[in-house]
Image (cartoon, rainbow over all chains, first blue to last red; front, side, top):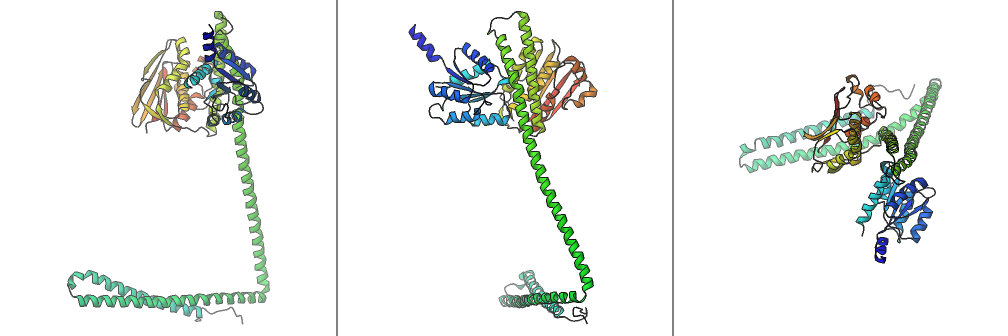
Amino acid sequence: MENNKENNEQATKHILIVEDDTFMSSLLARKFSSENFKISAAANTQQAQEILEKENVNLVILDVVLPGTDGITFLKNIKANSKYGSVPVVIASNLGQPEEVKAGMNSGATDYIVKSNSSPGEIVEKVKSILEKRP
Amino acid sequence: MRKDLKSPLCKTPKMKSIQKETRLSLISGIILFLGLLIVNLFWLFYSLLGKNHWLMAGISVFASFLIFVFLVFRGLRKNHLAKDSGEKESDSKEEQKSVTFSQSNSSGEVQKTNEDFRKLKEEFSKTTQALFQRETELIQANKKIQELDAIKSEFVSVAAHQLRTPLTGIKWSYLALLEKETGSLNPEQKKIIEEGLEAIDYAIDTTNDLLNTARLEEGKTTISPEEQPIGPVIQEILKQHEPVIKEKKIKMNIDFPFSSPLSLKFDKEKISIVFDNIFANAVKYTPEGGSIELKAFREKDAVVFKIKDSGIGIPKAEQEKVFSKFFRAKNAVSFQTSGSGLGLYVAKNIVEKHGGEISLESEEGAGTTVAFSLPVK
């Protein structure tokens, strides 16, 4: 029994959702939770940084338009950090012009999702595929 | 007696100098001509001279002498020209002096001329000032246009974001309900949610179409072509339309293997929009139980894709407008009220940016065929 519990905990991946729209954040969190992910939610980059400092996060889902520091600047900060710089970051934003996607990818994002053209289910599948490829 | 008056017949030092210069040039020319003539004759009759070395040596010495004389005369002419230029300078100074002298003597005329010059100068100065002012205005106007362009671009981006955000919220909540995250739905609830989702997707598509059109208008749609297989792109787009194809029981005839190794150089994102817009029209305007065909074949230096549907077609009189912005045929509006009329306009622009061509054939009540090509090279 204990062994099984340990295995499950090892398999549970921790996802940090950085999204200022709490309604959308909750819908996304609901989908990830139903797929046995551990979820942390942050409404701004300051909260997100605190979580990254304290906890072991496996992947960050990051919005671009955020109060205070914007998503792209925060992404650059994540990538420059020695502690959690290797954590993959998937941008989920409703900004989707080619130059915006390019800016995100050039700043170190693993993938860029335009939220309106996607569903929470598709985002979960994308995250699973990214995490599977990682050691 | 006026000092500046000079008779044209008088032999001035300037004229003498010109005559001397002409003489020297003439002598140099004659010598050069003779030299060249001898050299040419020598080469012409070279074979006739045989091995008469003395004669050959004599001719060579004579030709060399002529060249030497030519060079001496040329040197003399140069010296003369240098001397002459010095004289000309002092002449010009003297002329200036005489003009000043004449000015003091014919003050009335000179004053009038001076006044004319002053007016001309003022006018010239005013025109120059006006030109500078116009240039400054143009630079400012150009700067303003650039600023407005940047504001417009930012506005389009922000507007798209602001429109998409609430739509995404509604879409995701409807999806949560449809995927039974809050419990199962009865058939009526399910139908309402599904139709709501269709409406939201339409609003998102229209937003995307408007955004694409705005970018095309701004000339901002650039393509980044990469060599890649086309099959998976078509397959992905068809997958997105599958639910409606199934619902309307449309028969799909695909004469193109998706696993085909056929690779073309194209921008994946943009060509996906082309296939999406054409298939969306075909699916939308084909009645239940109809059919859609897809063919791809090589034609000269291009691959042609043909998408044929058995839909409502387009009246002949309206066919020339199909690639115009916001165009929707009358029968299309009565068949399906939704539609932005931007799909084919965007598709045409993208295909042409790839160096391809797009065309349409249609018969009202029988169906429509859209064909577009992508260059192989």
